[in-house]
Image 1 (cartoon, rainbow, N blue to C red):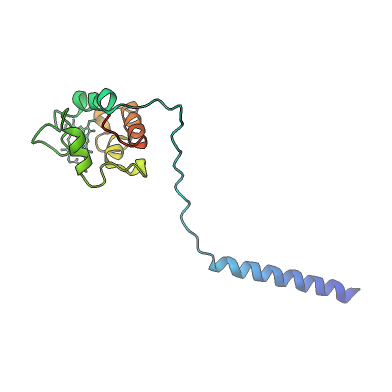
Image 2: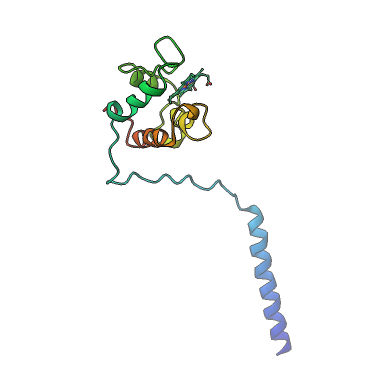
Length: 131
Ligand code: HEC
């Protein structure tokens, strides 16, 4: 009886040892970035109807033709944004430079508001169409 208890105890320790030694070798990866898929009911953002007006009202005084890139003037902005590496990332919208600049803490956030940044995010997530 006594030796059976001891055996059990040794087994438990052995199992614990195996598991504890395993954890050391586990490769801890970064948690996956969870991108919420757009809801089918999400309001569709139109570039010409909602995004360009933000640019025209709040950005073109500095991002006019021949000024700072990207050019955000109506008729030129879409092409300008799409031609710049990393500016629009439809796979991971939050990585888009345009969005990061406009979002809270971004360099351009002082010139727009959170609603503007959110609309831009949605537009990118919906495929950044020239719509
Ligand atoms: C007062 C002038 C000014 C206004 C207004 C302004 N910007 Fe900018 N923007 C700049 C300057 C200067 C730069 C380049 C230097 C820097 O990154 O700070 C820049 C850079 C950027 C960049 C980054 C370009 C790159 O190559 O990484 C983006 C995107 C951008 N602006 C978007 C916007 C948007 C969108 C608005 C309007 C909501 C806006 N800007 C309003 C002056 C301005």
